[in-house]
Image (tube, rainbow, N blue to C red; front, side, top):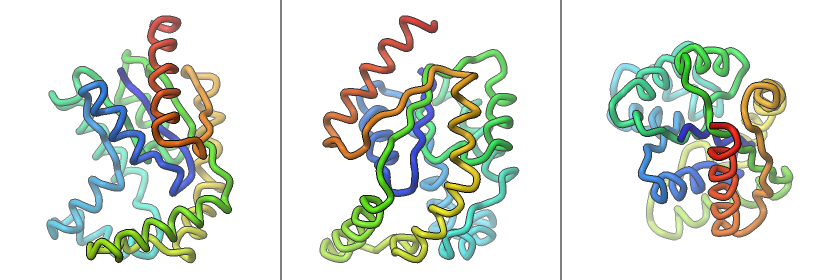
Length: 197
């Protein structure tokens, strides 16, 4: 089971990836989570990308592609994986194809959410983090979201077109309840496995 979850920042990719991975017993490979963990641990990679991420910038394609290639080649990903936040560019998509070799993607699922709803979600996520007494993500603010959306429009939307000809590709309404979105994705995966395997 090899799934790519796509969608703009704040569309629910992380939430859905975790839910799908729990259901299927496969690893959740979130480039954002991996990079944030590196920053928190103070590794050389974390130090190199901390300022870029805090400003809403994107880490270089080569760096992120190398991280993902290492993870999907590892023993924990042999039964499959869910990629969340990768690939963001055509260059990353091409690198992923190379890393996968003969392995085909089970599906590419894009979560569709209007931009005005994304700003509300980010505001709510920041408020909830503060209310719970936990740390707020450095990129959870309207200005950073706008920067990330510009990058998404400029680079990641074209990745959707890239996959429409190369893999089973589906769009899901990201405004539905988390439970309904999860059920729809699981239904898509079941159908894709039967039709395309």
